[in-house]
Length: 160
Image (cartoon, rainbow, N blue to C red; front, side, top):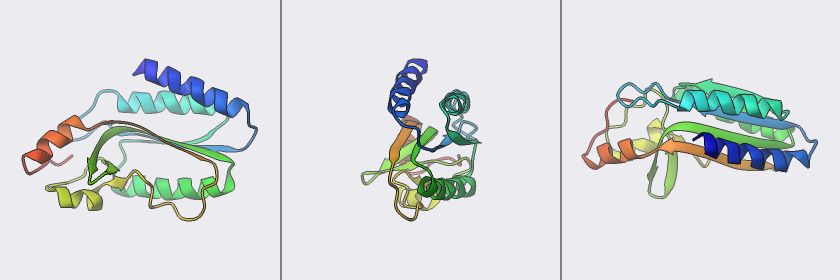
């Protein structure tokens, strides 16, 4: 994961060295899931936040965020993007794909069936963001899908 972060940071440095615009970032690291905890997302999010701050970003960092906190932070991020020149979103934690759409799984999600995913998770396409987004560089998603996919194929997922 450190190698991936290094490559990403180099790319970000190159892109933003060319620009003096205002920069905003939202960084989320979810690790403390009740039945499927992860080891690295919180540390990766802290490292990414520090690196982005060193590059002049105004960074909002969430660690182990539930659905409400994630949703509100993404809406606020959208508002910041409307005022700033460029933006970057970084997420580390559990995620899944249903019918071609990627979803970010918040802490405390209670998903028992596939049709509940869109109501208990965050759409990675950011349908929560309202208004025009001119210089959004897109998301960097570092999520673990294996655990969730395996459990969902058996018909139910534990409370996360």
